[in-house]
Length: 278
Image 1: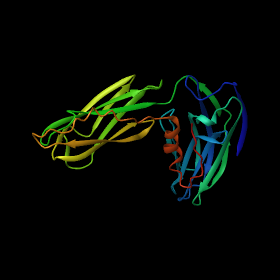
Image 2: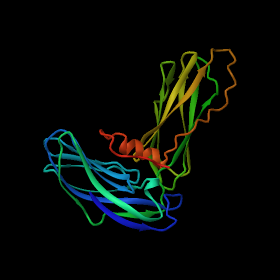
Image 3: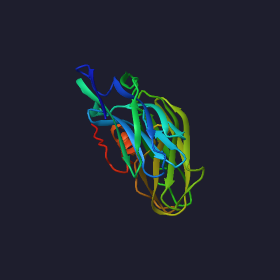
Image 4: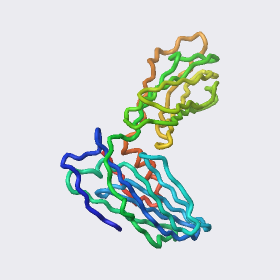
């Protein structure tokens, strides 16, 4: 383990105007024998903020990073020697006014070995005015109560509440069963979002009854998040359905906390990293 201390202003906090990132630059030698894996992670005040995953393949080592500050990086080292540079936002509780601690450590499992690890001198904590991606999504039906045999639209509004531009957005709508038939595919895309973006997909209400559509929001930085379920009651033709208001479904918020927990630490096979935000 490598440990260093650094000082922040007495009023330091993660957001809303000032944000802190860790820049992690390591040179690692990982055994190439297939099986198991290894991670090298950076943490501030015991809160993991950046991680590089190494997977020996027998023909070398694959490595990848996961970050909400930049697109994930990946590579292959035939001889097991990997030089990796990445950055990511600190956790909320990883930032405190005054003296802070930065640690870089390695973890292995399944027979893998980190034979050598160097933390390069440009590893540091940096300040930025750009926030992480922060998306909010709301959806509604038009008409509010579809009738069997008729078309209806699922409308979605995605709002970028953060200061980082959101690029290559995908909105995926998946019906619960064959009672709802997509008429123009399952997916909407947007090259960039600044402020708000609206989209709509048409469906055929094939059978009366209770159905639903699952709404997922996907970006290159955040991956698939949300999983909001939109309940849809399809009325029989000629029958008056309940006066359903517009479904303002709430809301897939990509808070820094939950996102890092899901993408960086939730997949770790040993569960050895803490993630505690807020």
